Image 1: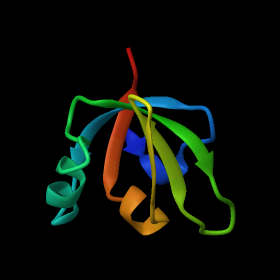
Image 2: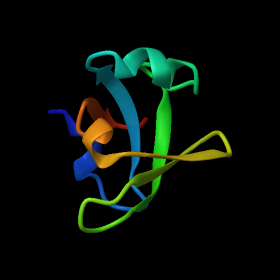
Image 3: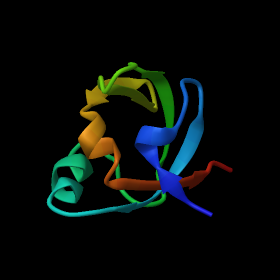
Image 4: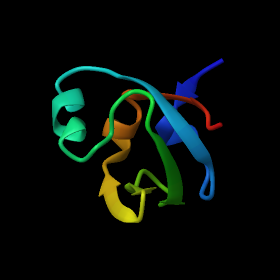
Length: 75
């Protein structure tokens, strides 16, 4: 069962299953494509951004964008 990235807690390691909308193109430029694994470094509370780590590269995305990313368990 998949859920959205905005609902994952800090420290969670997840595999991206699907990215909805035009966001997919922007995130593909950062290497976030379906099948890739990321770690949630920090989920800032009260609607703040979600900080992700992908192979040592850290970046933050808006929580509304994280809600458009379907994730599953990392292998």
